[in-house]
Amino acid sequence: MNATPTQEQLDACFEAVRAQCAVRDLAVERLSDLEGRYIGVQLQGATRTWDLYVDCNETYLKLPLLCLAAPRGLLAHVGYSGIVCVNDGQGLSLDPERHSDIVAYTVLAGYDLLERSASDAASGMDEFFNELEGYWLGLPNSLRGRAAFEVDGKDRRLTGYVNTQSTPQRWYFTERNTPPPPEFYAGKLAGQRALYVHLDELPTPPAHPDKLSASFIEAVHARLSAAQLELWSKLVGPSKNGPKILTLLISVPRAAGGRSLVGAVFRANRGVIDTKAEVVP
Image 1 (tube, rainbow, N blue to C red):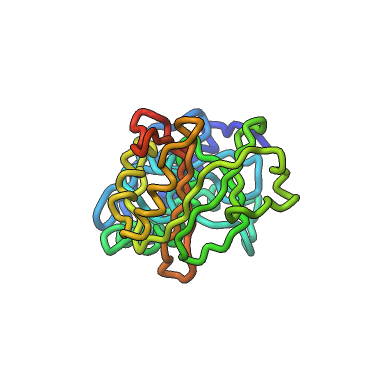
Image 2 (cartoon, rainbow, N blue to C red):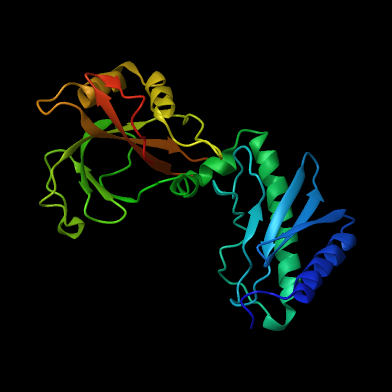
């Protein structure tokens, strides 16, 4: 199978999309092709127009990549860069002889998902925040971390460790005065200040093209209770070695049950957030 589809194959994929749209009485227009392998389609939804690009590469037997052009706002099942999570692939059966139909299925499934996501965005964003951690991981320059503490809603100071030799850097978090577990390989790493707080609601994460910044940390700070502010003062307070790298870990309840946990690495100097320093998700 060709890594780059021919123009005939691209046209066949669009015709399959148009046929499926006709069945559902949906108007569809073709946008300019992209990078020789994506076809662009425009579908009119109930509240907005969706400009989508779908990968028509036949190399892999899986649902093709579907992207929302020029993503704006926060939408459930849509990553920071606009990738639409149509299906996780589990329990999915595909016929390699019907690639254009697979493309059409993906576009229509993506359209239905986006329509539901638009409704979610207008009614509280429960579904978006149910998948908060997935969106957070897609933010620019995001780093993965491992935690050896319970996300139990009990605010407290923690200890963070960062391996600056790994690429990308990797963070680890443990209870204070508790050695990191052996599988963290953090025994030789210096401990860093970290704080875990639980909020009823998270400030709005950045949407494309904005990045996580000190304004998000300030927005979290503005929501802290008196007890949480006492912990905060110990996090950002002066140290013998001057300004330090700090980590704020935040959990919020999920409408689907349980708690989501996200974090941000930032800097503070003499108790004040450094608004010029990079904030890393």
